[in-house]
Image 1 (cartoon, rainbow, N blue to C red):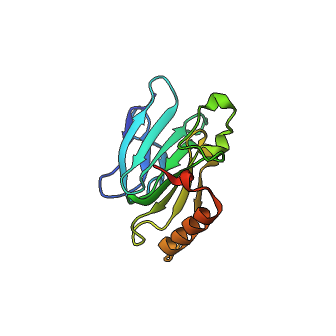
Image 2: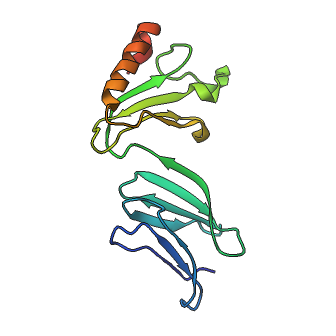
Image 3: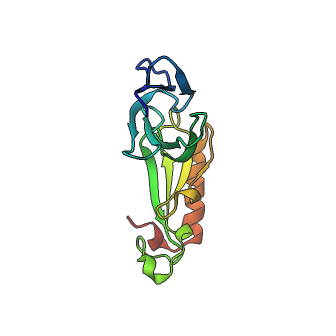
Length: 167
């Protein structure tokens, strides 16, 4: 059983786990969330630890199933670190938003395209799948992100029907 789970409040992004006597450090996870950790929670009766980052805008699930007490990263989700400027729902059949999955729509087609609003703090364009997180992608990291995003949207507008970008 775990008696002590700590993280420091000085923007240290490490998680420490100690034994019952609180004398032996069982494991330490370094650089879990750059910018600090905002919350740690164990799932009841499960060897799973959820952690959320302060500045990283991410959530991670660690699985503690190794005999040496070191966890493995089971799942993680991350978003933009600043509010996005562009958000578009994409669907291959040009429907308004997303059709019912009962119509045979593939999970890869249920996507959200978003781009950072502040190139000084977040230089990314992301494609999120609302059906399967394994299909998430991140593109175009760099100082000229907004220029690339505008060119990308202009390209899409030329190729796709006008109603695909209705919100």
